[in-house]
Structures are given as C-alpha cells and as structure tokens.
Length: 397
Image 1 (tube, helix red, strand yellow):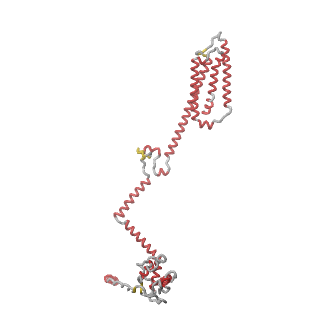
Image 2: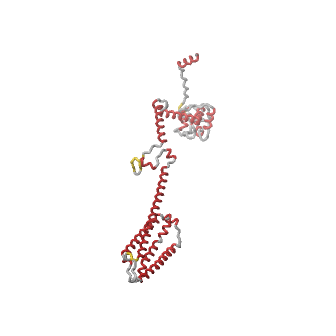
Image 3: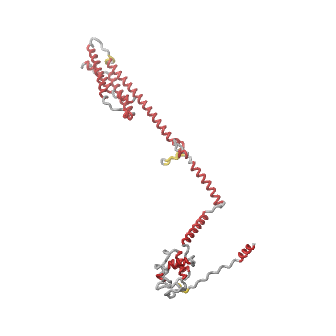
C-alpha cells in the first residue's frame, strides 16, 4: 500500500501543473485585452489554497516515505518507463485543456450578443476545475494521514511485541538462577531499597539456599567442636596435636637416619665390634687418598700423623673423641671428613682405629700426647629389693 501510494504521489506535481495551465488558457485565448486571472481575488485565494495543500501533501508524503524508507528500498525497483508515463499523462491533460479552452475562446466571440456565465468574476469551468483540484488535494491528504496512522499503528504493535519478547527473555531464569532463587529483572523495582552508590543499587535479594544451608552447617559444626575440645575435652587440643605431630616426625626421622646410619654422632657413637663393621672401617682407612697419607697403612704414623697403635693420644683415645676428631678435624692439619663420609662410615673407621691398639707396626712413631686409659664399664645398678620381692611373690603365686 505504501509503495502504491508513493507511485501515485509522484504524479501530483505534474497533474497540478496541467490544471493550472488549464485555468490560464481562457485568458490567453481571449487575447491581450482580457484581464489576468491573478487579479481575481477568488481565483487568487483558490490558487493559494491549492499551493498550501500541495505543500502539506509533500510534507506528509515525505514523512510517510521516510518512515517506510527501508521497506520501500527493498521492494522498490527502478523502472525506465516511469518518466515516460508521467510525461504522457501531463501531455494528455495539456491537450484536453487546449480543446476545452478553444471552446471557451469560441464562446467569447459571441460575448457581445450573449452573456457569459461567471462565478465570482471567473469562468465557471475554471472555478470548477480549481475546486476539483482542491478536493483532490484534500483526498490525497486524508489518504496520506490514514496511511501514516496505519504505519504508526503497525510500528507500535511491533515495538510492543519486541518489548514483550525482551521482558519474557528478561524474566526467563536459567537453572542456576532458579537454583539460587534469584528474582527476575522485572521485579528489581520492588526489591530496590533506595540506596545508590555510584550507580550500584542495593536490592533486597534473598541469600541463595546453598549459602544459607552452608551457614547453618557451620553453626552446628562449631557447636560440636566447642563441646568436644573445650568443654568435655574428649579430643586433643591444638598443642597436644602439635606435640604428637612433632613426636611422630622425630620418630620417622630417627628411623630414617637409623636405616641410613646417620643417627650416630659424637655423643651417641659406640664401639662397633662386628667383623663386618671392622672390615668396612679398614677398607676406608686403607684408601690411599685418606688415612695412610698421614698415619701409614699399619697405623704406625709418619712425619705428619701420630702413631695410632699406642696408648698416647693428642686429642683423646675414647671412641667418641676419635669419632669427633674424624668428623671435625684438628688444628694440627687433620681435615674434616664429615662432608665425604657418612656418620656410620666414621663410626666404622673410629672402631677400626680402636682395634689397632697393641699391634706392632713396622716403623712406629714415638708416642705423642697424653697417656690414655680405657675407662671401666659402669657396673649394673643393684636390683630394687621391692621389685625383686614383688617378682618372687608373683612367681610363687
């Protein structure tokens, strides 16, 4: 409908121009002595009305076409015969007006004998043509208004449908929103508390169920924890848990070091007497890069190191002192072996050195240091008489 209306309105200027020419022909046919039609007030008023209505038609047509411009561009295809059709229509109207005004001119030749019929000082045919043009313009204006109203109604319905669709989408909650019991966007106005902080509004939304249930479980757990650890004391305290953890860790460390032979130090080392340990210590001692360079292969000593087979010792002859000397070295040039030998290996070497006491090296070095005497092993403590009596009673019973 809009397309057909646009096609019709484009011929309006040509039609109006033809009608104006038709109104002017009687004046030209009558000859120069006839007065101009523009001198007639009625004709001038009608022409002004036609011009005003024509302007209104142009404005309304532009509004209508502009509102439906996208649709018209898609549907309107250029045609080369439109200008020809418009020109043909205008030409036909001009020819019709020429024949009409020719009759008016013939009638004016008898004006002296017969009275010419006029309306408001202008010929009746001219008046009726102008009035027809006015009614035609009014009809076109009414048609344009109806089309504009129809277009606005259609656009309003489309807009309402789009808004409704957007509201439906906005109110459609995802499974996550339904799980959290969130309110749709359309209800935000009812939830607004009126607090606005830099564009961030405060809403009275309910907390998600999972958050509330988690909070309730925390309260229950806190009550149980308080009762067990701080009221009934059926569970270990934080300090007790720490001490137990440290004890378990120390036990694991000691077990590991025991397996690796690293639990021995200068305070806990004891004399090893097994053949395997002695042989292992001898193998380490006889390594040319280690002990023989200073003490000889038989432990008799040389210019650098002392004799290890006698009872005289510079730094002490106990197993612990020898272990310490091997581990940390000495001021006389004895190097520290703790970075090259493990604690177990140093204990084996110290035990092998203790086994060299009393042997006869080939070239023993003169004694150095102080005489060392082995300390007697401590006697076993006397048995507790009370414990012995209790044991006897238990055995008799």
